[in-house]
Length: 118
Image (cartoon, rainbow, N blue to C red; front, top):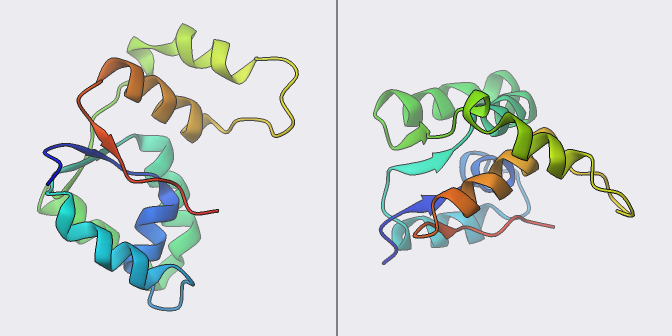
């Protein structure tokens, strides 16, 4: 079992929305990655937006019980994140949430990463 997990909005949405195509996968992955799960505010913003009013209570509950924590301060890594956002020759531009997660993986090398759902 992984001791630290880094989660993105795709995992959170899949876990909390039974209507999501990847819901069963996310439910199966969660026990192997003990909370607290780490993320950033940009991911939380995406997840709240994607879940809407129906999913917000579940996401709020994860935050309240500290099963999900925002463990990244953009202010401390703003230059590194901006460099990631400005990379040239990229077919798909990186979102702020993705750039923060990439930076988090570089800062917290012991974190496991629940892969994004494509």
